[in-house]
Image (cartoon, rainbow, N blue to C red; front, top):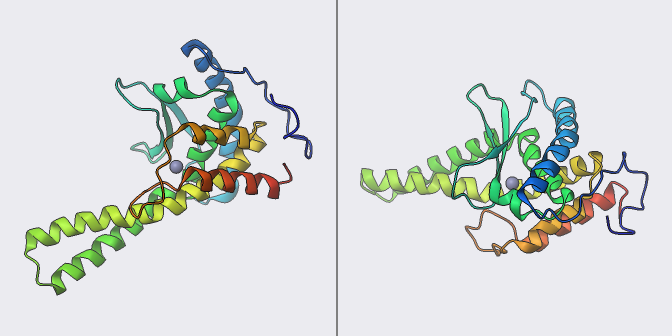
Length: 222
Ligand SMILES: [Zn+2]
């Protein structure tokens, strides 16, 4: 653990930092430690801040071959929240703080209701695109394809904001779990920056790190 940065108000029992995660076995061990700490914190925040939403997170490793480093949040057929991390992401993580921040971020998407909100915004985008196409006298096939494009644009436009919201709440979850979110968010510095393009669904990495630093400072750290 680096000196200095976590010398704010007392953190809830600092987590042991295993240092660089050099082998898959080390990564797997660190991951189960992180899950054991972050999952109950995320569940508690979910119960406090949502109504009639399942909060029993299932945190899983997506072991399908050939997948890139990635993490995502989804729902199982019963509507229970699932957070999945790929093996490549576990391999790429350099310390437990990074894994904790990824989990904090993904569980935040669920607590913030991003999947239902994304579906609503995708629907609005699809309807709007359909209306515009009809006004222009487009053929039915054109309308269908514009609707599909509208759906994906609606979702993407919102998901950039959702990413930043999940980074902010993920910062809180990471801190409450005893990990360092600023150190964890350094993960972004090793990922390709998506840039600030119109259709880019992810905010620039620098913007995300700034949100994490600001939120950690608001919570009394750094
Ligand atoms: Zn996200």
